[in-house]
Length: 232
Image 1 (cartoon, rainbow, N blue to C red):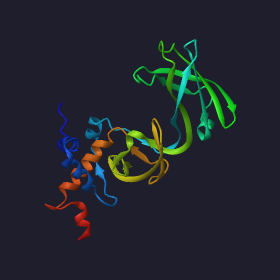
Image 2: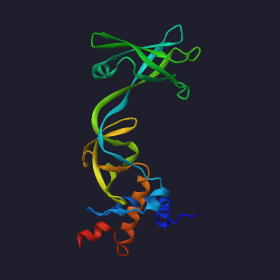
Image 3: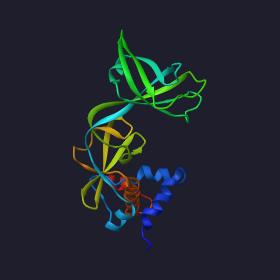
Image 4: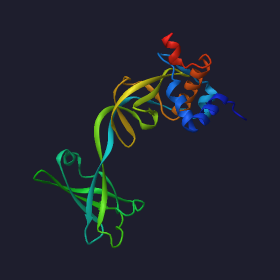
């Protein structure tokens, strides 16, 4: 069965096109509380998913330089300031030689020793490190929060604006500009713009945004944009 999604597919090509298409993206967002309706068949075709804005621990990472011991299994480093307070035993570590980021090694923090102004940290690799390599970049995954947050894939960036699509009722989605804080590996902190438990579009947000903007263009008189109508 062939699903007919002409406007969604057309706008997807436009948005992925050259700089001129990007200009359209900047000027065709409907103002006010107007939303976009997506049918059940369209939602199924897009495998549309929703996620609630909620309090979550946001994971970020602390990047530091480390050295490996003679066994090839223990990485050591030191941290100071606010970053030192975030590191705990058991946290996950990604490590790689500075010359080869593709050679990624997994490790876990096994020791944290307080020192003046900071901590000394040891991490145990799950496999032996690279031969003849002493220095590594360490990325220690730490938890921040909990904060009100949404999945990273729900957020559409337009210049300095961050937009999410909120479900008002099944099939009806309204754009909301949010103010963001800490961006983690999976989730981004929301400082303002939506409330806790708001249902935001995650997978499929790009296509809803494209449909929303295309409808805004279709409703504009020739040679005008939605913003022009607002001023008359």
